[in-house]
Amino acid sequence: MSDIDQTSRVEPPLQQLGAPKARHLWAANAGHVDMARPPLAPRPLPVAAAPQNVTIDLNRSAMVVIDMQNDFCARGGWVDHLGVDYTPDRRPIAPLQQLLPALRQAGMPVIWVNWGNRPDLANMPPNQIHLYKPAGTGIGLGDPLPGSGANVLQKDSWAAAVVDELAPLPQDIRVDKYRISGFWDTPLDSILRNLDIRTLLFAGVNTDQCVLHSLTDANFLGYGCVLVEDCCATTSPDFCTEATIWNVKKCFGFVTGSQEILRALA
Image 1 (spheres, one colour):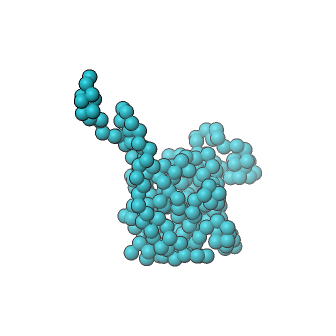
Image 2 (spheres, helix red, strand yellow):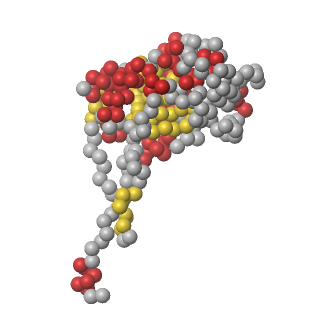
Image 3 (cartoon, helix red, strand yellow):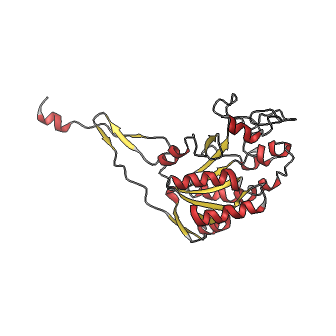
């Protein structure tokens, strides 16, 4: 082939490499890989918060909703079966019904992180099973609930499903978890990094348990963390929420409310 033929040859177009929703992408063809893809320009959103106001980047933030599942938040679920008043865990439903559509419209990913245990509990050590069946008897992880027969917190069961009032949309992302923290032994961190997420808003139940420990793990991994107070709830005593809010503001991030975020978006 002549020099003229070689210089006139047209390279095939670069093809995107990365998950459909990923923001950290490569592009490639047979002769070239481009790792220097242009980043999205920041979209600053100032939000009133404590102990300081914060500005988040809408292009690098995500909403993480934890454990808004039938077992915790619905009549006939596991908490209800245990004789505990489950209605406090329903308090985030109404504010989330307002906030989530606004966040989606603004382009922020919504990530549902829920208990979703294997039917064989093969990855659940005895200490975790004891946590939910302390006397070794009764209805614990994976056991069928009286009435519905749904298996407690088992993936794809009614018990583990998100409550009907907050049904996830197809574009939302779902992550199954197997511990109090949504980051332990799950793909959550990898998903967030592929999305180029740097800041996380936290909502769900229980404020002092799965929400707090997912938030603290996110803090340890370097994410900016914002607890959306009225979109969180717990069946624990009030002092547990008070301690959680104090510790988040003192050590792990910031606290705001859904109305503050909605006002900022507006």
